[in-house]
Structure formats: structure tokens, C-alpha cells
Amino acid sequence: MKKRKISLFDVVLYLVFGLIALITIYPFYNVLIVSLANTLASATYSPYLYPHVFDLTGYKTIMSDTYFYRSLGTTLFVTIVGTTLNMVFSVTAAYVLSRKRLIGRKFFLSAILFTMLFSGGLIPTYLVVSGLGLDNSIWSMIFPSMISTYYLIIMKNYFVSLPASLEEAARIDGANEFVVMTRIFIPISKPFMATFLLFYAVERWNEWWNAYLYISDKNIKPLQIYLRDVLVNFNSQLATQAQSMMSSHNKVFVQSIQMATIIITMLPILCVYPFVQKYFVKGVLVGSVKE
Image (cartoon, rainbow, N blue to C red; front, side, top):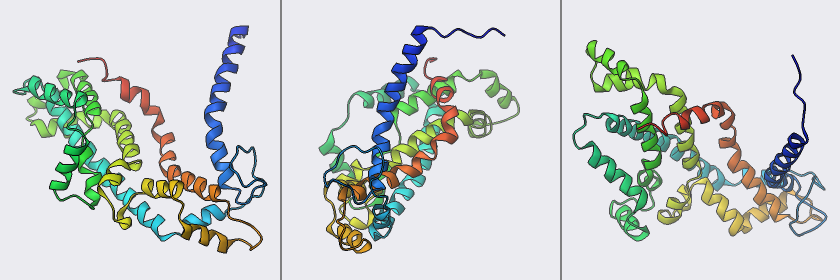
């Protein structure tokens, strides 16, 4: 087999994209390096290529904080329960809207699309959530974002694109709507479902806005709010814990604790990506064109 000759354009293209990849990756690398170096040559934050003094005090400080585990538990609950409800309601609504025999289908679709362009606004939404008694409740992070309109439309288009013969064969065997959805459509849509399961899970894991608005109880704040508190309002208690773990002649490098918090916060959801990455292109594009 004849090898393809590499042209000057290929070399330039590789160099350009390699540089873009380096620019994209380096901030994450720098965060990791700073999180591993508690005492640095300089007391100010600046980019580093390697840890000047390798130290895990930042990670030990976060792992010894009680509120970290409480916020982690809240985030795990919101991610697991919230993602499950997201998928159940989104898939069910998408399947119903994909049935062309649904009475008032165009009206429902128009009403749903309207919400993508216009919303009630922050204050009316806050009043609704407060009126439902969800203040200082973990459910205030789940119910207001139960369904993503954008994901719902893509799911609906995907169900429309499936061959009608599948449903007709199931109807001949006496299957009803629920059986067609759960026994026919969902099983053959696993790659597609896996993609949106991950999308919803990432959104739930990174949930902070609703918690910032509706939750003031520190015991049920999610991990992202905990991260914000560490980054914006560094807790003096954490600094004291970190100092007690170090020898008295070393100062606590606040940025190492903050960067360690970032690493710990993003690592769990980051580990999920490799398992479902192969579904991304197929899962997203398969239902995004055809009506």
C-alpha cells in the first residue's frame, strides 16, 4: 500500500492544531500543578511548569472538611435523582410529541418552542419556586430544570426518524403505547439515550445557580457552591486546618487549596466521559435534522 505523502500544508495544520490543543490543556495542567504545591517560591499566583515543593496539604485540607462531604452528598443526590427524573420526563414527553396522531400536537410543540425564546424572568420564577415552598429545599435544584426544551426537541426528532414499521409490527402483536415506547423504541435507542443521560448528569453535577438563589442552609448546599465559597470567600477555618498540617515555618499557600478543590470537584464527572464519548456524534446528530 502506497503511503500518503505529507505536504507542507499538513505540517502547518498539525502545528496550528497542536498549539490550540496546548493552549486549551495548559490551564488545566497549571491548576493541577498549583494544587500539588502548597509552598512555592513565590507567594503570588503565577503559571508553573512543575511543583516547586510537592505537597498534598491542599487535598488533605479539603478532605478533612466536614462541609465538603455534606456538599458532595447533596450534589450526588441531585445528580442521580435529578438526572433520572430528567430522562423519564424528557423521553416520555418526546415520545408523545413524536406521535403525529396526537391531538393538538402542533399547539403543544409551539408552546414548548415558545419557552426557548421567552421565559418568565428571574423574579417571577423565584416567586413561583418560593410559593411552592421549595426555599431551602434540595428539590429547588431539581424541579425548576426538570426538562430541557432543547434536548426534548432533539429526542422528539429522533423518535420521528425511527422506522414506522417497528411500531406497526408491535401494534399487530397487540402492544399499546407504553409497551411500544419501553420495549421497542427505548431499547434500540441506548446510544442516543446514553448521550443525553451524560448531558443531563453534567448539568446536574455543575448545578449552582438554583442553589445560589433558593438555598441558604449551608448543610444542603451543593459542591459547586462549596467550590465558589472556597474560591471567592476563602474560609479561615480551612486555612487553620491547613496550617496545622504543615510545619510552623511554612506558610499556607491559599491557591493550592483552591486549585485542589477545583480538581476534586471536576474529577468525578470527568471520569465518566471516556465511557460514553463514542456515543456523542451518533447520539446528537441522528435526530437533529429530520422532522
